Length: 263
Ligand code: PEP
Image (cartoon, rainbow, N blue to C red; front, side, top):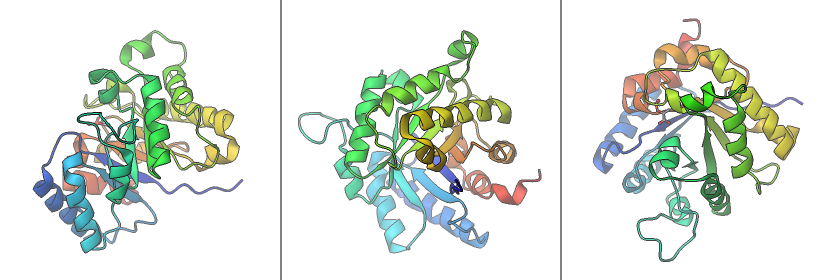
């Protein structure tokens, strides 16, 4: 089976940049990538701004005909109704977003999102035509207390994808919690070991074809200096980038990892 997975470099802005800053950032990122002759078919680029920036990002992407994709950082498991503060996948899809993050570790820990909630959110994303980027990964404690570092990720994956059909467009982000925002990046071998196990589990859940087509990203302190070694691994198809995605130079350099792959 010959499958080519287009690498995806995704910037999770978290709660940074208001809508004016978002417009300026996306415009400048597009100029920088154009100057560098970036080919978006070779490496896809997506940003995940706060909800309040999405309409502005949509406007600039459409007006300037940019190839940059965008998504939301979360969605409600419900479609509409009395859920104050929540945002429906329908509204996100209406804004032209392609992606939505589900189960980021900050949602799981700060907002207590369980595997059941993550499953409902994956289902809601798919229901509204969005591609869920499901985040999974173990804490340091969980890594140290288990013989298999992939156990937590696989359990989270199985729970969230229980009702997903083979062939559905989804993205998985392996984000070891101990590496997020800490500067402690997983080694390329550590990341590959878990991403390979995730691909194996996807094969069991959705069949080999879906497993071969699904992009698995690594996330956790990805920087220009470490992205090339991570991207050399066979089961890693891109990165979910937090801190470094807030700098044009750093994010553009991560997107252009091919140009420093020998470093
Ligand atoms: C993230 O928030 O998904 C993330 C990976 O953050 P950072 O790159 O800052 O570790």
